[in-house]
Figure 1: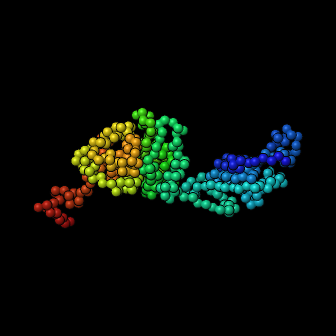
Figure 2: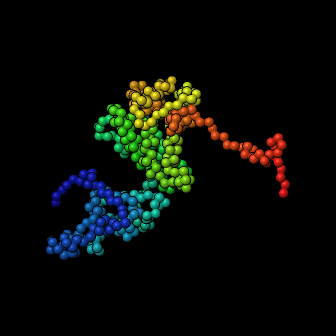
Figure 3: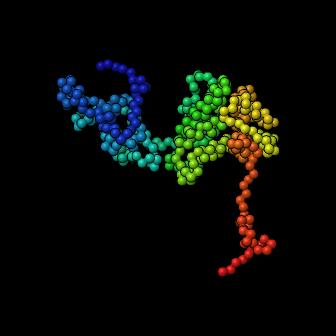
Length: 378
């Protein structure tokens, strides 16, 4: 008897469940062509073509999206889970299987494409319900593992400051609690993963255009990643009225405000705020090089020095320092200490909008002498 070693890849088999999957695919079937070529009877075991499950013997067999599997195919899995063997076409062919079966499925209210039939669900040993990351640190670890951030040693090299990574993760947390986004569909971890890839790509494009050797991500790159955010959630009626892009921009601003509170709360930014309140304005964009950003930022006294204290190392490079300046300005804007517009860039905070009182809305003809109200009787 030949002996062989099964490597890790050979010990794991995964099948994506689709409605067109058949019993022959999963368990096996009789192969008449094989029988004819070999001169064997159809009742011979040598004429059998075994499916994925027998071929996964002494390994792990996983079925992804189990509810999408047709009901009669799910019934065919009963004997495997209960007795641990297979039977093909009613022939007394028993294959004692040493196999671990695992299934994945979304909650029933997430999709209406199918369900797990009750008898099969009863035979599943354990049901494990997963959840979204509960903390920003765990979410950042997942994104760093799954996102395509290492560009194979290409030039320029890419760097993502900690505050940018936290903002990208915070977008998902803000979206999961926003009433304008459908809670049943949820917001998966794919949102920050794809958003982070787009953030790095935009930073890489800027570095290539400006001839920089290091591409450092900025907060403005997050706004450039809007297309990777708007397609990752379903809208409620209120969100559809406002539009997915407007909702995504609100989520980014709320995320920046949340993260900036931890980085900038201990910094004294009054001098910078006063500079903008006195009529100063600063126009920056995600296409400007680090040298241009720092050149414009030095117009504001103390801005560059304060940015060094916003979670940056003491020997931060110019691209990293430009990212800190961008984060500081976006943080002040997100916390409503300064304003921002497409025409003027960053400027003084907009005055609060005062709602007119009911008294001020009264028409002059309804006022009595001296401004008092007239009384009318019917």
